[in-house]
Image (tube, rainbow, N blue to C red; front, side, top):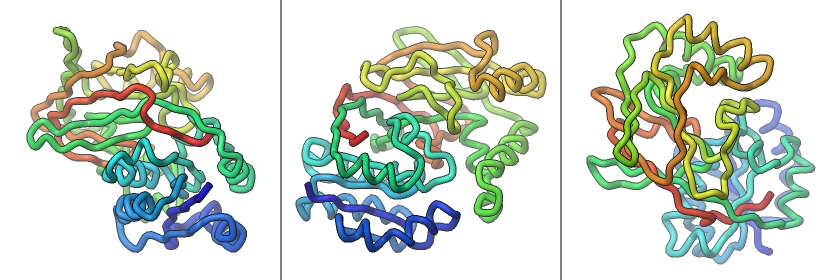
Length: 292
């Protein structure tokens, strides 16, 4: 089993420092490829497939996973040829949590070395204006969610971690929010926040999509008609104590394909800003091979 590990040598934080201290061990059991610029992980993943690697490991957070995932998609028959692994070194590591990957480096590396494969669904978003397709591993969001990511101060994020997203979310909360419409099978739902899941988790250990199954061929969609201070106060106790949402505040549906439209709104994929709506979201059943 030939393993290629793609990582950001400039990443900060205790997990990244711990990873660098183990480079000799990991490098003795795999090939290490360091990124040199934003989005470089995508190029390196495509090159790794051409070089004949069987496993490509994203060592980083959900943004790194997204880059590597799309690099696999750029290669001819990439998803058929390689398996994706994760070393969770990021701030939140939602996809690693969904896979059940340990959040500590050594046991996570042991999981990858054992090479247990599982096939899961592969979602993607298609920009309706251009036809460009982008894959995502775990989650997507539009409206307030994407606006909060757009407002994140990354120097603050390096200092305070996940708190930076909360601070940005509170800033987005007081802005005027566009209505985002989700349409599928002749029905539509509108709201100020739409979240899309290929698994149960969002924002860490929070089960925003409790019925989600990454192998059922369906995307779970959660629409918040309004996102304001009263909504926040209704959601906060259950969200913080039970890590779940009060169902009275949201509308849900499960579907294999749907569209999001809005007058002036953007969307995010795996915690990274993707671009403006409109977009079509679809899923390919059990196409992604992962180690977990």
